[in-house]
Length: 114
Length: 113
Image (tube, rainbow over all chains, first blue to last red; front, side):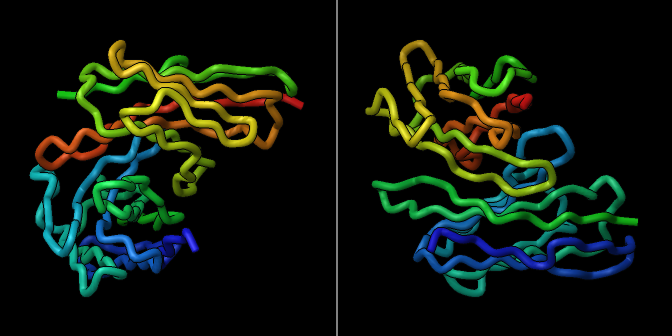
């Protein structure tokens, strides 16, 4: 099973809403990632959880908050977003055990902020 | 800072043609390079990963090469099919501070029937 699942597939939210994106993998990977992708642009790394340690892209605003309840689950909590935050949000995972670093991506959540 | 460039930005070919996509990077101190395919509005599908010590990897009609010293990788697609139409992205794994993966902007491929 090389699948990374993401829910929901689509999300429309107002600027005052609080919502969460979810990501799950059952490949035993110890690193999980959140990316943001705008149209016709490459993915931009937002957060990394590797062996339960969080690394943050310092350019990501605090209205995005990641959470890793366990090594298989990754959430992205959204609060007071802006219209420019509308994008495809991608989750990925990798083994990161010193021998295998191949990233596997989920299908993404298409987020629209109104 | 690592910069990854993909040329061409778009490519249109007739079905059956062999083609080469290019990826170049400015810093050769990489751990690996990965090629992805992305269909419109979808996630990324991993095609091939080349470790820094390898020169090439093959999977079916795909062959990826890596020349670390010159900062180049190519993705060769043999006997292209309309189903190959997608955007192809390369990403280098560098592990510098936070930004582990640097992506190119992609090559949008259209294979005409």
